[in-house]
Amino acid sequence: MKYINGIYLGACRANHPNHIIMYQDINGKRDIDGDMLEVNISHYQYVIATPPCNWWSQANPYYWRSEYALKTRHLLPLILIRLAKNQKPFIVECVKNIKRYKENRIFDICKLYDIKYQVVGRHVYFSNKDYDVSCPQIQDFRYGGVRVNNDKYNQGGTNVHNCIEKWITALEKELNEEN
Image (cartoon, rainbow, N blue to C red; front, side):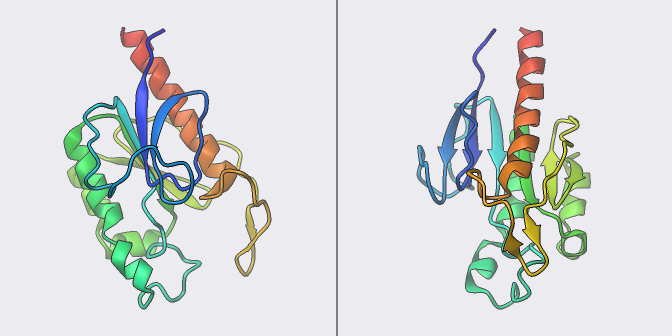
């Protein structure tokens, strides 16, 4: 089995200990510093990215006046374009907000660069690989935004962790079969 290394941009507290991954984190384990749009990804065989979701989240009714949301809203479309042009296997996770994706032309970017997307629970997964990342979802919030399952993975919790884990496993299997 060949070792496959990846990078996780904007990982927050993501952790996939069964895989070789460097973390460009925003709040926790930080192997690599820098902006997700500028980090050198040439040394990695695949890329995972979780840009800040404050602009895109339905849970943020003040997205249009939140300084942080306004400063980071550009990251989702730009990371999608950057990764699609790079042509390495990638997956990008963000919260589900179909209306705002349409208003901000995210689906036009997907069509232009042949990026597939899959809605799983409260999240959307964008990728240049057509893997099924669906898996059972646990309730992690209840009405009013109160966290029910404040687990160790944070940023999307177990739901995002399991979907990303499924994607990495499928990619590693494919890459190992090619070699």
